[in-house]
Length: 202
Image (tube, rainbow, N blue to C red; front, side, top):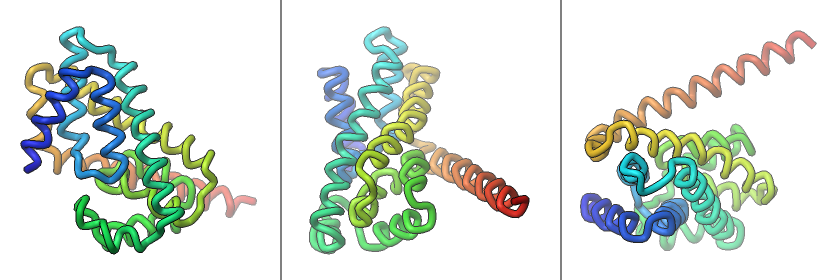
Protein backbone atom coordinates (compact mmCIF):
# COMPACT_ATOMS: atom_id res chain seq x y z
CA UNK A 1 0.00 0.00 0.00
CA UNK A 2 2.80 2.39 0.94
CA UNK A 3 4.56 1.67 -2.36
CA UNK A 4 1.47 2.70 -4.33
CA UNK A 5 1.14 5.88 -2.26
CA UNK A 6 4.78 6.78 -2.94
CA UNK A 7 4.43 6.13 -6.66
CA UNK A 8 1.28 8.25 -6.84
CA UNK A 9 2.84 11.13 -4.90
CA UNK A 10 6.11 11.15 -6.84
CA UNK A 11 4.09 11.25 -10.06
CA UNK A 12 2.04 14.12 -8.62
CA UNK A 13 5.19 16.07 -7.75
CA UNK A 14 6.78 15.30 -11.13
CA UNK A 15 3.66 16.57 -12.90
CA UNK A 16 2.69 19.59 -10.79
CA UNK A 17 6.08 20.61 -9.39
CA UNK A 18 5.92 22.86 -6.32
CA UNK A 19 2.09 22.68 -6.06
CA UNK A 20 2.51 18.90 -5.89
CA UNK A 21 4.88 19.30 -2.94
CA UNK A 22 2.45 21.66 -1.23
CA UNK A 23 -0.48 19.26 -1.63
CA UNK A 24 1.56 16.28 -0.45
CA UNK A 25 3.06 17.90 2.63
CA UNK A 26 -0.22 19.57 3.61
CA UNK A 27 -1.92 16.17 3.63
CA UNK A 28 0.99 14.67 5.57
CA UNK A 29 0.58 17.30 8.30
CA UNK A 30 -3.19 16.73 8.30
CA UNK A 31 -2.51 13.22 9.68
CA UNK A 32 -2.75 11.36 6.37
CA UNK A 33 -0.34 8.37 6.25
CA UNK A 34 2.09 9.88 3.75
CA UNK A 35 5.77 9.02 4.44
CA UNK A 36 7.68 12.25 3.83
CA UNK A 37 10.95 10.36 4.45
CA UNK A 38 10.29 8.29 1.36
CA UNK A 39 8.83 11.05 -0.82
CA UNK A 40 10.60 14.37 -0.21
CA UNK A 41 13.99 13.07 -1.39
CA UNK A 42 12.36 12.87 -4.82
CA UNK A 43 12.14 16.67 -4.76
CA UNK A 44 15.89 16.67 -4.12
CA UNK A 45 16.41 14.48 -7.16
CA UNK A 46 14.36 16.92 -9.25
CA UNK A 47 16.54 19.73 -7.90
CA UNK A 48 19.62 17.78 -9.02
CA UNK A 49 18.10 17.57 -12.50
CA UNK A 50 17.56 21.34 -12.50
CA UNK A 51 13.76 21.05 -12.39
CA UNK A 52 13.48 22.58 -8.92
CA UNK A 53 15.37 24.86 -6.57
CA UNK A 54 16.25 23.32 -3.22
CA UNK A 55 15.38 26.39 -1.12
CA UNK A 56 12.07 26.94 -2.89
CA UNK A 57 11.19 23.27 -2.30
CA UNK A 58 12.10 23.66 1.38
CA UNK A 59 10.01 26.82 1.70
CA UNK A 60 6.99 25.32 -0.07
CA UNK A 61 7.11 22.08 1.92
CA UNK A 62 7.51 23.95 5.23
CA UNK A 63 4.59 26.27 4.45
CA UNK A 64 2.56 23.19 3.53
CA UNK A 65 3.47 21.60 6.88
CA UNK A 66 2.20 24.74 8.58
CA UNK A 67 -1.05 24.71 6.59
CA UNK A 68 -1.75 21.06 7.34
CA UNK A 69 -0.76 21.44 10.98
CA UNK A 70 -3.15 24.37 11.42
CA UNK A 71 -5.98 22.11 10.25
CA UNK A 72 -4.89 19.38 12.70
CA UNK A 73 -4.57 22.06 15.42
CA UNK A 74 -8.14 23.20 14.74
CA UNK A 75 -9.36 19.59 14.93
CA UNK A 76 -7.69 19.19 18.32
CA UNK A 77 -8.98 22.51 19.61
CA UNK A 78 -12.59 22.22 18.48
CA UNK A 79 -13.20 18.45 18.19
CA UNK A 80 -10.81 17.14 20.86
CA UNK A 81 -9.88 13.55 21.67
CA UNK A 82 -13.24 12.31 20.45
CA UNK A 83 -12.11 12.87 16.88
CA UNK A 84 -9.22 10.44 17.28
CA UNK A 85 -11.44 7.87 18.99
CA UNK A 86 -13.98 7.99 16.16
CA UNK A 87 -11.98 8.65 13.03
CA UNK A 88 -8.31 8.07 13.87
CA UNK A 89 -8.35 4.54 12.47
CA UNK A 90 -9.04 5.90 8.98
CA UNK A 91 -5.66 7.68 8.96
CA UNK A 92 -3.80 4.94 10.88
CA UNK A 93 -3.91 6.98 14.09
CA UNK A 94 -4.83 5.49 17.47
CA UNK A 95 -5.14 6.66 21.07
CA UNK A 96 -1.67 5.38 21.93
CA UNK A 97 -0.17 7.78 19.37
CA UNK A 98 -2.20 10.65 20.79
CA UNK A 99 -1.36 9.83 24.42
CA UNK A 100 2.34 9.67 23.56
CA UNK A 101 2.31 13.10 21.93
CA UNK A 102 0.17 14.53 24.75
CA UNK A 103 2.79 13.43 27.29
CA UNK A 104 5.49 14.95 25.07
CA UNK A 105 3.55 18.22 24.86
CA UNK A 106 2.76 18.35 28.60
CA UNK A 107 6.41 17.71 29.47
CA UNK A 108 8.05 20.20 27.12
CA UNK A 109 5.24 22.65 26.37
CA UNK A 110 5.62 24.91 23.36
CA UNK A 111 9.13 23.64 22.67
CA UNK A 112 7.65 20.19 22.02
CA UNK A 113 6.08 21.57 18.86
CA UNK A 114 9.45 22.86 17.67
CA UNK A 115 11.42 19.66 18.28
CA UNK A 116 8.62 17.25 17.35
CA UNK A 117 8.59 18.60 13.79
CA UNK A 118 11.91 16.76 13.38
CA UNK A 119 10.59 13.46 14.76
CA UNK A 120 8.93 10.71 12.69
CA UNK A 121 5.24 10.03 13.47
CA UNK A 122 5.14 12.58 16.31
CA UNK A 123 5.82 15.44 13.89
CA UNK A 124 2.33 15.22 12.40
CA UNK A 125 0.39 14.29 15.53
CA UNK A 126 1.77 16.98 17.86
CA UNK A 127 -0.66 19.53 16.39
CA UNK A 128 -3.58 17.67 17.98
CA UNK A 129 -2.50 17.99 21.64
CA UNK A 130 -1.35 21.54 20.90
CA UNK A 131 -4.89 22.30 19.78
CA UNK A 132 -6.45 20.40 22.67
CA UNK A 133 -4.22 22.35 25.06
CA UNK A 134 -5.19 25.61 23.30
CA UNK A 135 -1.56 26.58 22.71
CA UNK A 136 -1.06 30.18 21.59
CA UNK A 137 -1.75 30.09 17.86
CA UNK A 138 1.09 32.44 16.93
CA UNK A 139 3.64 30.44 18.91
CA UNK A 140 2.29 27.29 17.30
CA UNK A 141 2.70 28.72 13.80
CA UNK A 142 6.22 29.99 14.50
CA UNK A 143 7.52 26.77 16.06
CA UNK A 144 5.81 24.57 13.47
CA UNK A 145 7.32 26.48 10.55
CA UNK A 146 10.82 26.74 12.02
CA UNK A 147 10.82 23.10 13.11
CA UNK A 148 9.75 21.92 9.66
CA UNK A 149 12.69 23.53 7.86
CA UNK A 150 15.55 21.25 9.00
CA UNK A 151 13.46 18.10 8.43
CA UNK A 152 12.51 19.08 4.89
CA UNK A 153 15.95 20.44 4.06
CA UNK A 154 17.61 17.23 5.25
CA UNK A 155 15.35 14.98 3.18
CA UNK A 156 15.53 17.12 0.07
CA UNK A 157 19.30 17.50 0.29
CA UNK A 158 19.67 13.73 0.78
CA UNK A 159 17.75 13.19 -2.45
CA UNK A 160 19.93 15.77 -4.18
CA UNK A 161 23.11 13.97 -3.10
CA UNK A 162 21.83 10.49 -3.94
CA UNK A 163 20.56 11.66 -7.34
CA UNK A 164 18.80 8.87 -9.24
CA UNK A 165 19.33 6.60 -6.23
CA UNK A 166 17.06 8.74 -4.03
CA UNK A 167 14.70 5.78 -3.63
CA UNK A 168 17.33 4.02 -1.52
CA UNK A 169 16.24 6.11 1.45
CA UNK A 170 12.95 4.22 1.57
CA UNK A 171 14.82 1.02 2.53
CA UNK A 172 16.59 2.75 5.40
CA UNK A 173 13.70 4.84 6.71
CA UNK A 174 13.66 3.03 10.06
CA UNK A 175 17.37 3.66 10.62
CA UNK A 176 17.02 7.30 9.62
CA UNK A 177 14.16 7.65 12.10
CA UNK A 178 16.26 6.13 14.89
CA UNK A 179 19.17 8.48 14.19
CA UNK A 180 16.91 11.54 14.12
CA UNK A 181 15.09 10.56 17.32
CA UNK A 182 18.39 9.92 19.11
CA UNK A 183 19.77 13.29 17.99
CA UNK A 184 16.69 15.22 19.13
CA UNK A 185 16.62 13.45 22.50
CA UNK A 186 20.34 14.22 22.94
CA UNK A 187 19.65 17.91 22.23
CA UNK A 188 16.77 17.96 24.75
CA UNK A 189 18.91 16.30 27.41
CA UNK A 190 21.72 18.79 26.75
CA UNK A 191 19.39 21.78 26.95
CA UNK A 192 17.74 20.40 30.07
CA UNK A 193 21.12 19.93 31.73
CA UNK A 194 22.16 23.48 30.89
CA UNK A 195 18.91 24.88 32.25
CA UNK A 196 19.21 22.93 35.50
CA UNK A 197 22.88 23.94 35.90
CA UNK A 198 22.00 27.58 35.30
CA UNK A 199 19.18 27.43 37.85
CA UNK A 200 21.52 26.00 40.50
CA UNK A 201 24.03 28.80 39.97
CA UNK A 202 21.45 31.48 40.72
